[in-house]
Image (tube, rainbow over all chains, first blue to last red; front, side):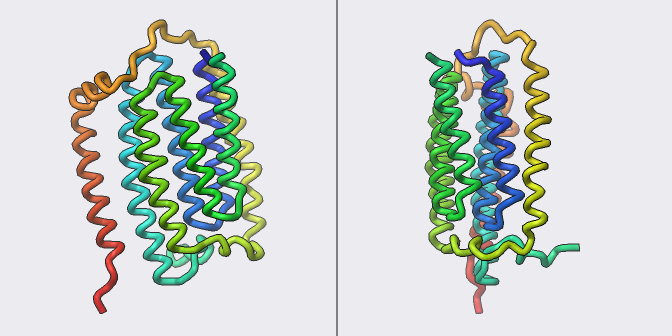
Length: 100
Length: 164
């Protein structure tokens, strides 16, 4: 059995890769997928902690994270489609209307 | 044996995550993300979280990724990131930021290594989680259903074409 801290380390690496994707990419769809990657990394740490503490609470929390992620993806993709309809382009650099 | 399984799964997970971030084509990134989500489901299995592994495959690799691939196909990106990047000086900042975050997280994970692990691992069966969801987490569970309803209504409103 691999130690639980290895799972935490893997979760940390996946989370950092997700952060890098959010910062470095221009396509909002790829940024969204990077956010999913970060959510998954956190889910993995939840399950690893639940495994280590011997309690099923970690898994229950992951269940809620999955539900919220599903709602977030549906709304986010609808917003992206609406933006694309308005501008016919898809780059986060163009979306500066609310910039201070 | 289990350590080897973990090593292989971790390599696939990190490699596919890097593929998602580094590949220019969004559809390649989506397929890499499917691989990554499947690997995380396998990791759940190694942690004895069978219910979550199944839910991961159904909800993430199934429903969410279908939505993503559908959106990518409809919006036809892929040509969006080929031109010169006018904000390259800002985007290069990703390297130090990611490195700092990684060092920070490595420090935290390393600091908790000495803590002794619990003796008995809990069962991850559907029965235990279901009982927990309908007793201790009953209120969050109901709030989640309201959230899903709100998301559904919001999406319908956003996706509707304006009557002209």
